[in-house]
Image (cartoon, rainbow, N blue to C red; front, side, top):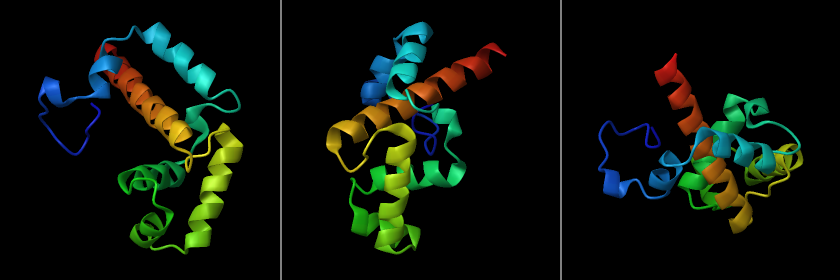
Length: 118
């Protein structure tokens, strides 16, 4: 559920996903509403989410991420500023980035639970 590019993952290798998986859904929903006070995570479009995921994949490195996205560095900085305005989180700051990363994982968890129930 957390590592979409892999089909089988050892439970011991889930890391923080293991903690999230054990949380009640109500607590997860409260967490998301507290993190995204300004706008819901659902307001972010696919391009923005792709940019965020690439930024995380490249360890918050603006230059490397802009190279991988084939965009100018300033374009990426502009996108990160837009995300900051939308969410109140500056992904270039480690604390904000980790909160956002956990929130993305929590959202994935909630969606996967909804799909299993439906």
